[in-house]
Image (cartoon, rainbow, N blue to C red):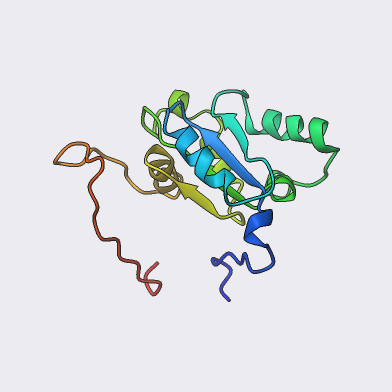
Length: 153
């Protein structure tokens, strides 16, 4: 298994500890309702700007769930098995639109992350991809095929 692959085989899906970061979009609660059907743990929902920094968010977890030790990545792993980044207004290149989202991605390389719309754009942005407007404008509600080739980096 390559180091870039995440293995959830040790986790029962109904026992996942899920963090859902809300980027100020009403669709977040559709995601919340669906995710809540997948796990016995309450889904932790945090507004992207509820904390000034990722450290402040992690400190809040430690206060409510007992002191943890380690670096940011390990601390997030101690609390969550996966992270979902919601849609929302704005652009990932504008820090004021993103709150703790970009740092959460940067320090969660060992945690599976699903990004929806803005959340997906943020993943690309953090990993060095250019995020631009589509030539045809926003496209919502249309299905398109997605292809993945694991041989390409």
